[in-house]
Image (tube, rainbow, N blue to C red; front, side, top):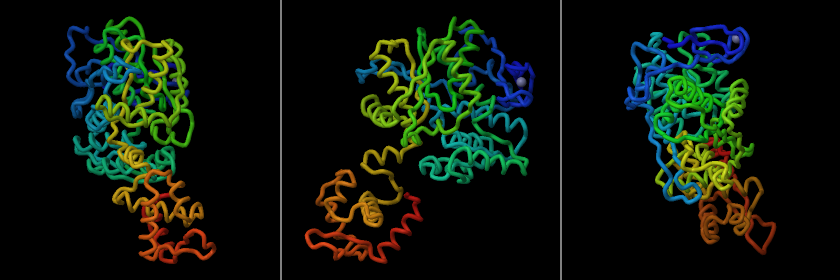
Amino acid sequence: MWKNLPKCNDCGNTSREPQLTCPKCKGLISIPPISGPSINDLNLSSMWSLNAFLPNFSKPISLVEGNTPLLPITNIENYQNLSLKLEFRNPTGSFRDRACSLIISDAVEKNVNNIIGASTGSFSISLAAYAAKARINSVNVVPQNLELSKIEQIKVYGGIVVEKGESVDEAINHSLEMQKNSDSYYASPENNLLTIEGQKTIGLELALQKDRLDCILVPRGSGSLIYSIYRGFEDAISSGWIEEYPKIYAISLEKTQVAHLAESLEVQEAFLLDKVKKIIQETEGKEIEIDAESMLDEALELAKNEGLFIEPSSASVLVAAKSLIKEKEITAESTVAILSGSGMNTLNVYAARLRGKKKIVWGLSESSTTKFEILNLIADKKADYGYFIWISLGKNQSLQSIYQHLTELEEKGLIVPSEKEVKRKHYELTKKGLETLVNMRNLIDYL
Ligand SMILES: [Zn+2]
């Protein structure tokens, strides 16, 4: 299957398994650089046009992934002419399709009927789609509280979803436990050489697509995307397509409560992050930390001005690009920013922002959501009269509409005016109101 045999960078041990860490010394296993055809002999139509650089499979499973376009920014002054690599144009909306095409091709080669995987979303959506194409059953373990827009997409492709654990690490442990007592193929994006070899085609494509490429901006996440792209450049240099590596900038997030928006940051592969540090040093790039809060606004700007809908974590590269261009550290014309995932995968995050809500509950109207928020405020004794409820909800709607909601809640017997003060109307929950609130909280896991 391999063009060059995987080899441990530390002890030289070779292996045929697609694992990323050496079973002997825990060092990083990689494929030695591959020399492919000359540029003139290549006609890029999908990732598989680059099959000279990919493992051999008797029956590759493809949904025509890769060969994603470069598009320059034309309407946003701050990064005019910056080229964007549209990875969200892949079949299921993320660069993970490049990895899953190889992983499912490997599963087919090994003649399995079932695969088990774990991730925080995009990878599982992709895995479910490619498994469907290969007519393999997929079980996808995801952390509880994963966005519904991701869970439903996995199910649409016929994937079984198991919600387990508070973090992706717990989900991974559970999936490994499930796999142990079965004959299923284990597919996770982490510690997987096929993930790297699939995703490296981004680097190869960049070498073909961009005449002058000085810098690339990549979301750091677990380090897997950066390492993959570097691997692609390694093959491109080995094939004589380019002479040197572009500077690689790794964009990560300052740790804040909104960092959950960046699913990829949740898994930390320490051994890959070490490698990423070396790559940044070698290519004279930089590690840049940005404020996660600004990503959503930047993504909305991109949608409104350029017609591109990406997920908030993908906008981290744009936030970084803005300051790097301003400081004249990079030139927009010779830089590419990698846009890794589609906004469709996090539709509810956008819906919440556009409606001025903390969180959107699917199936509840905007008015019901507000009533639910009001019941929560009164029950938790955070606010119990109209004016202060209005302030507590961020003044996103008129004060009048808050009074209207209170009147309706009172008419339905969910709240009553308390008797403690006469000047203004304070409310408390009735027994029915409390029951309703408890039921709703149980139902939608709001808090
Ligand atoms: Zn080793």
